[in-house]
Image (cartoon, rainbow, N blue to C red; front, side, top):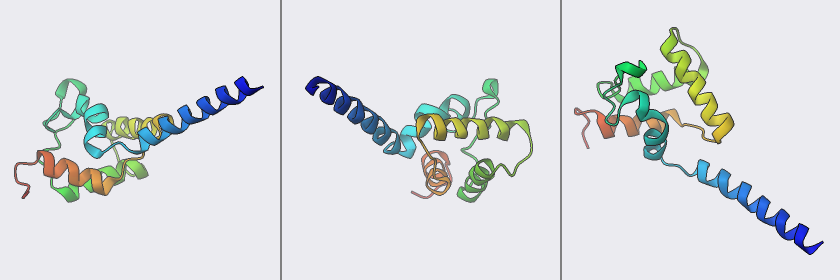
Length: 116
């Protein structure tokens, strides 16, 4: 009986720690792990993956694009792929991207015109 309680507690803590880890990822970690494959390490884009450049957009354009993807108010296959990817991040990985903070991260990290 005691072993079952210990095993149950370990399983419970494992689930909790996995969720906390996903929720605690920074925008930089999310971008590096899930975005740079298509959008490039410096936001330069990846034509082979049909990922557009992000380093030439201002923070408002980035925010609008991310909101469009989250709200599915867009046209075109590129945004459909992004909507699918963001849905997978949220439902399967427990990661919800905040459009405002991610837009700021991308802009200030990659846009050469950003004032740091």
